[in-house]
View 1 (cartoon, rainbow, N blue to C red):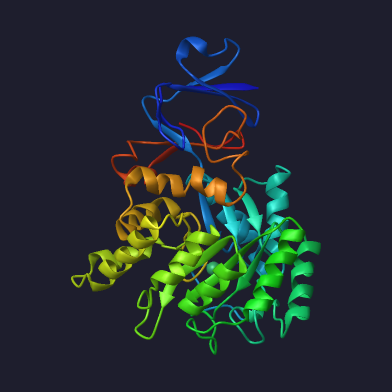
View 2: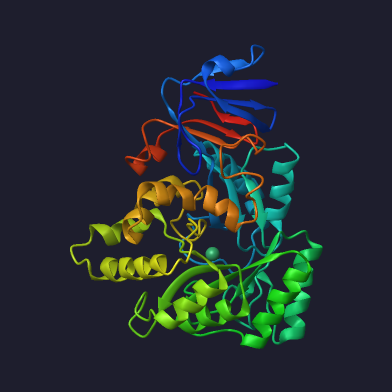
Length: 388
Ligand SMILES: [Zn+2]
């Protein structure tokens, strides 16, 4: 079936386009064109001046976690299967057509991914890491990925491959969610980290590393991980208190992407009378940006209070905290995210040959990112999740 969306303002993932129509056939975009070039047999949907952009991507979510829970889980709750399907549906309806799941305990998200791929249920394209590799009693050990040494860590890695993981997640430092683990401290040595990255690459998988403390950021960058999650520069005085230029230079030189997991709740920092923390964080993002470290949008959805479908709200907050323009912020959730996640030939832009992952919003997000919170149409791989 050929569908034509007409009467659009189009931002294609890189730049505004002069065309005003998108034609797609089944799951693939056929052309970005003007009205006279729309094929006659196409089913036409008139969009009344809405802005079209590529479906959004959240590079860090946990499908199995219920954000209504106030505390960290002790283990995977198999009863989450139903709610996970609901979350997946809410995400696409909000315009999120791709998400990277960075940890669960029982591969429920991999089942969900497969159900979405086979068309059984509506949801975003998922890339899943399975159980994160962590130290004994380390961050999120309750998910079952504990390893005491390199040999055990390699076993955990292969267990994820056997379950169909798309990438590998390593907990390079402790985290707040796990009692007894410290965000500042590293959990592995460089030899272990580097060998894990090599083993993942040998199996054509990328590696995402959870890093709060500066030592963990250094370790992950030197080991050659592909994305640094959080990248919080945690020091003695908390978040963002230990930014080190020479370590940021290693991150830049290694070509690692930074996925800062800024959710919409960070708005409270922007609203705070005391702007010390915001200014400190913005300074860090600006320095990393000047060094050429690329960013990808992410929220860590699933942790307490961070809902899976709230990336559109989070992007405005990310833009303000990091001091990025609207267009650059949009790229971190579309074309740049696709490059970082190895999906550049599949999605992230409105371009012939790519998947028809299309979001229509009311208003111009290049003027004001809050337009993203008013979705009026969404197609995920050509399937309508919301119709204008
Ligand atoms: Zn996470």
